Length: 150
Image (cartoon, rainbow, N blue to C red; front, side):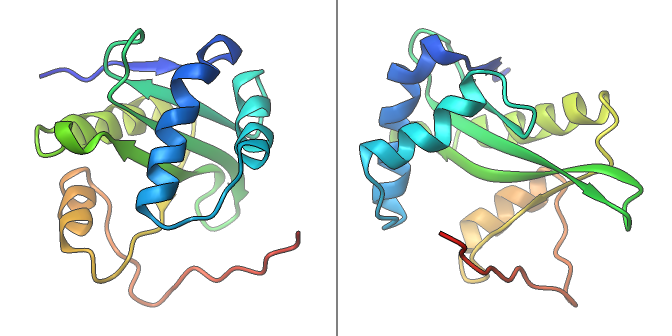
């Protein structure tokens, strides 16, 4: 199986938004249509801060991944953070997410991204197995901390 990664644009909002809504519902993240629009549209309109990709066939995507960009002195340049990754439940377990994450890492490496990070629930064994399969390793000394500003 080869999972296609399609850079999403504003014309893809109607396909992407229901996937994001499904992910947020599954993860019990309270969002509104307005907040999803505010989070997605800049990425779909070419923001340099991140990108959204549709996974699988562009006309009927089976998932998505959102990546954001930053800078790291530790890693020596631009780094990226997988903000969200979602595969429709009926499609899970077929290697789509693994292929997409591996393909995304290769694509980002080719544009000089030095490190790719993500956040995972320490108790989610399936997700941990997926991310390890895709080449991610835990950083045992560190944990992600957040201060919400708005």
